[in-house]
Image 1: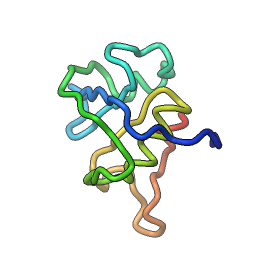
Image 2: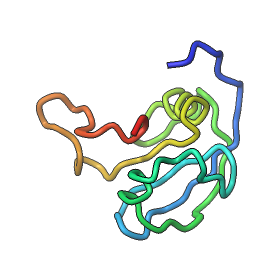
Image 3: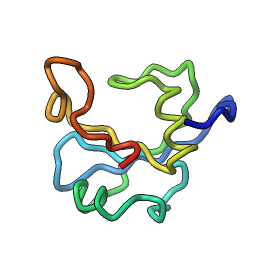
Image 4: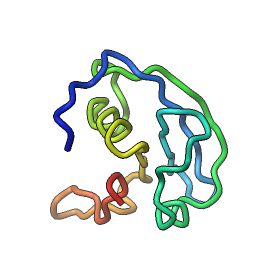
Amino acid sequence: MSKTPLPPTMLCFVYRSKKNSEMYLYLPEKEQFERIPESLMKLVGAVEFSFEFELNTKRKLLRYESAEVMRNLLDNGFFLQMPPNRYRSENDGELGINPQGF
């Protein structure tokens, strides 16, 4: 993980997976899919633009910490929001796969 400080705010562009309900792909730039691994795009399938918003470390997100999303956007060029509990282990609460660093 990068030690570069997070910016105060950043735009975030969110795409909904047409294949997987409640799976969303966050990008730091609209329509910039180049940094997303092919294997991840196969998992996500076709996407459609949903919305954009301004993200900062104080903004509350439903399932993830804002700083975690921002860090993945900066370091990896994307963040994948998985459906709730579908890929989680009851034992450790962690994702069974690593979609952010695919």
